[in-house]
Length: 310
Image (cartoon, rainbow, N blue to C red; front, side, top):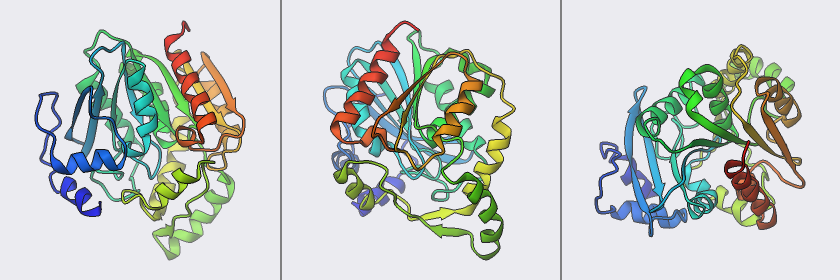
């Protein structure tokens, strides 16, 4: 699989387009490996340049759609990790557009690194502008963790975000777990190193998923300290964003030890007056890839919220 991924990454000139074309053999193997749906729908993929990086974009469009969803993954992850929620959403008639954040998955950029979180936000803004803003159908955002942090910034600080009808933030990142210790330790650690070895946490109760992540060739095994510093700076900047009336649903696992969810929920309550919060009993950080009973509850909540009157 590593060679397949390398072949796709070496073909970054392959542009994203909605035109019909034969599916490349490497992409067939990629989609099979990550269990991504490509049959019985319009599946499109390719690369686009945003802020000097090549973003890998994928579109999963059922033959009949009722709305568009921009789906965003979390730190270290990529679109392939979201296959379960992608399958659920297209079965419910949503067009799912997703991309690998810079430095993640098949997109270019230093692995797991970012100079400023504004690069993530610019990626959202450009993908929305190029692919969704002209549609007459409702547009939603569904985002996990770091993707949710970028979505929050996009909504609070970009006037064009008013086109977003609703957003679902799943275990959103504002501050990570042990925030105070992190802000103190980073000052000393960066004197001696630029990276730390990644600790892969048990952020799901699904043992098969945890095994998959540990063997996923698109995961990264280092934590760049520059990413942590960018997160610290972003925490100060995001405080300045004006509250938004856009309806928001937060789905948060009560056993999440990746983010400081109590602080994060409190912070987001101040920024989004039209907010609903659902705490998931026994849910950990990776709610999209929890064991089936928890995952079904999460998916049902997403569908109910997006299709209900709010």
